[in-house]
Length: 426
Ligand code: MEV
Image (cartoon, rainbow, N blue to C red; front, side, top):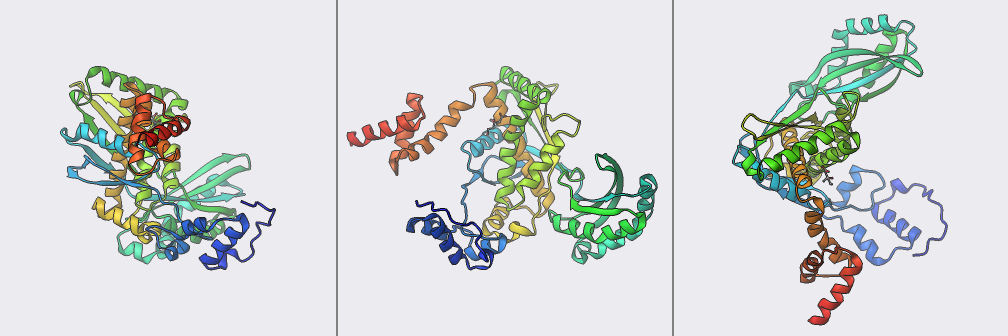
């Protein structure tokens, strides 16, 4: 590749057709014809569609979609598409779900479907008074908000509640208005952001202050999804395994360093379903982590208990702003197919399933960590990647992966040497 110093100021790049953009990148970097072909192969997202989803589109990035089997959610058997690049994530959910299937699987519920948008007001001379004056205007606020989205109102959504908080900040006291809106089957970012922007000038006028930020909060704690499940002690390998899992949970509950990894495992499951359905992974992730720190210290998102019968009861509750309409969910053919496979008819149902997968993922991680450790299973799956990195193709991949696992050395250098031996033996 010839990385000759060139300017990255590609004027008019965003206005060009995709083919011309690709050409510019090819020229800039000195890419080969094969690279161009890779960019032109957009998989199951037509190029034109991708080009309308984001700016400056030149290609797509395909991620494998796997199906989590064995899942029973709210009494319904459901196949769950998961988009993830991480080996063992799908298998973990399948295993966890198998171990609770006969005991009824997962049960889910929602606290509501309400999104919050914030309007930041500064320089109000009398913040306490200003707060009350805003609260008094609830009927006008409702009217301003509901006018923004007649379709949402028709679907039974719209403005629901008003909250006004006073925040002490380094720039002084801020009066922060929360409009709380039922966004039905939409994630709702567009709806609430439009309302916040429309409402802000009135808030400024009523209070004599100045409004700045007008944007949703990803800490969607009026839209909590909950999943619960009980694993019978005999189905998970006995009391010793259960007690080891409780120790692992208590570790995460007490220590943010462990909680971050524990919750990363939860999000392995959650983000995979959120992505497969074309929803906003970052919105759900930021909401989850903010919620995990809501008590002032970052902690476990899940909660585990031993029931009177000695079984293991798990709970997961977290903000779950996912929708069935709008954005990539509606536009991406694969997201539509994922929703079809899931057979969901409401955003609440989808949120419940996503949360059940998060709980399953956490169960699987705790179980493996409290018993064999992750490396054994992980390396068995990872060995395929290493085999391919070493140049194995077709049937060689499986054969070489097995050799690496048997040797207990899942490394590229070993794989290369073993591949040579394998080929020589043929
Ligand atoms: C790896 O992606 C996820 C785990 O680290 C989660 C955990 O430690 O609980 C296995």
